[in-house]
Image (cartoon, protein in one colour):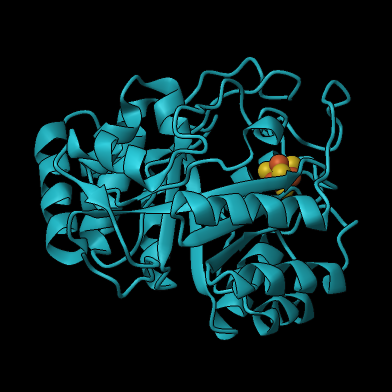
Length: 326
Ligand code: SF4
């Protein structure tokens, strides 16, 4: 697919159901019917950055802030183990309070529990990423948000787009499975720009892609903008599945937030991952956008299997690396 063809598929004129079916068929052929559950622990909503769309941005003074300490994080991970989880995702704002040593300690403790471990901690130096890898982390999520430099600058004041690209390069170089992604339907974002983002995912050979609609958050500069449509997010996700058949793609909580049954629709349109929250109390304050869906919080593998059976799917028994198929 070239840029023109992708734009055509993203536009309203092309056949939505046909695109979804093609993506679903590709997912089935390359990844199987297993759905990987990743247990998400959002452990700090402090952030030094000020992204204009984000509810936990530094300048939002109306938000109650929290941090979980090492023992609280490990306790939640142990609970995840009891529920059946095989992957933990540690996510936070760009919080400088957690030193490299502290994070290495937390990573090592979680790895002792035989989890695959994904980190989503934002932009760090090469040395920091290497320290996390040395401690045992397997994967890293860092959304590029948009490859359009002008748009990136508007959304991310005082941030370097070049550094974001560099971080992704470093993560690849260090041997992480690398996840990136975008929001669709951002103010001033064109279909051409989304098509370029999709081609970028392919170019860097990303291992995971997270796509979600832009959902305006109160107490942010973009609070009064119109949110992205569900259909556009699904279209973009389906195209990514067709172009990159072997990668892992989550049915993002933003999809469920803006559309009833959105998670299942996403799972039937190319997605093969769900990231239930294992720390629902703190998740309420990790409000990147409002009314974040919490229906799968703390779900056990048995309960998830029951839900997934409604769409002919099941919880995967593997750790869900890119090469795993079930
Ligand atoms: S999007 Fe990430 S880096 Fe930006 S303000 Fe929110 S948590 Fe911080």
